[in-house]
Amino acid sequence: MKLMINHQTHYQYTETAKNSIQYIRMCPQSNAHQKVDAWSVSIPGHKVEAKDAFNNIWITSTQRYAYQNLSIMAQGIIEIDTVSEQAIESEVPVGIFLQITPATQCDAEMKAFAAQHVSKKTRDELKHLSSALLEHMPYISDSTQVSTTAIDAFHHQQGVCQDHTHVFVGMCRELNIPARYVSGYLYVPEMSHLASHAWAEAYIDGVWYTFDISNQLYTPSSHIYIALGRDYWDVAPIRGVREAGGVESMTTIVQVLPC
View (cartoon, rainbow, N blue to C red):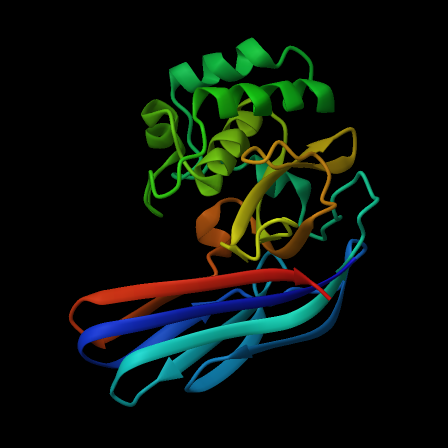
């Protein structure tokens, strides 16, 4: 299936900003699951492209001039495999994805929840955990913040895809199952305007499998990979610092359409 992606992020500032640096992970790569036919990232300033420790494409952009508006636009066409049951392989050592991070740390109640729903380290058992998690903490838009941890979201009993992924990844690691956080896009036929997406993948019997807790999807048949890491902070689409600028506001537009 061939898809067109249009991802726009627009920033506005109440005062003049300058000397800013943006770290951007919004570049997909071709792999066994997807073929990138065309892709571009548009942002003012000087750009340097590299790869991070997880083999994600990482753009550093610097703006020295004064501004009150800043737009970052990523667009392209990607063809995805809608049949495969497995997630993509990675050159990153599997053991890295057993590391507990502040965003994925679990407390005693979460560890007990995981043990209650997973008696064997199988794909079916993790599907059961995924279902139980969504029941415990249903998806509610704007119910948490980007800084919300797995512990906070679990006890808040609601969240968005980032929260579901952090909690699931953390529980898998507590069960000694390598798990990674994936950022990207999800194609939903009846919706033209979406948001960027996140899901988990767990390593079982030598294979990576998809666990999209928010949508209860277990294959990447509708997913486009952008970046993977231990948690959101390894794959954040945009992070940055600036001098001055006052109060910042942000507007995001994401479209995933067949073509």
